[in-house]
Length: 114
Length: 119
Image 1 (cartoon, chains in turn orange, red):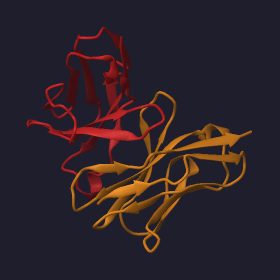
Image 2 (cartoon, one colour):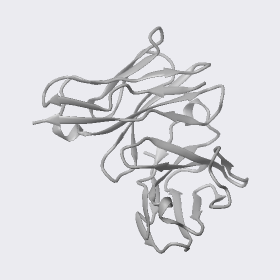
Image 3 (cartoon, rainbow over the protein chains, first blue to last red):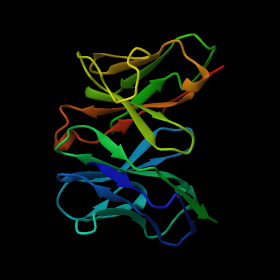
Image 4 (cartoon, one colour):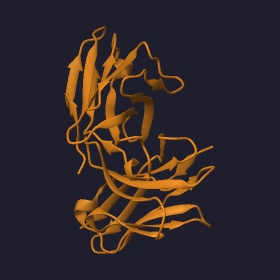
């Protein structure tokens, strides 16, 4: 079965410090992996995706994510957090074997403390 | 980049009435559109997948007669909540993918969401 796990409901980090938001996945085939960010009362905004190629993916707003096949992980990272990064972050996976459907994690609320 | 809009952004209605939510892809043709429902502090729940010109595919547990989806063109899908009740109050989000969903068209672009409040 396809699934995505975000083990942390809440992540707090001080402004200027590096941040990591964790994501692990489970799919039967090759995964397409995505990160989205959601600000209050807004839709989801695309940050980055991994399809194939380099395991380190660079995305919007200085975010990056590393695909680790052996650990089935796709953690989101940023070297220096900004207060404006505070939002809800969703990891998603699309299993190429099952078509267009995306499977979303439960979300991680990131708070960057000034 | 690809932009998806939703209208209205917020709607309040009386119990028993029907509400239509529109989802439009503004600068691309969306062969496939998705409708999600999100409860406070929870993840997105896929309700249905809509392909232009064909009937929507509903997820298990979603009443297709209550949540009517129409995808009449490559840029517009509508979700109609029929005979709305307070338990239908939620944040409804649509998304769209370009083309046929291949590797170059696999990203979902999300609308800003519609908050439905049923009194």
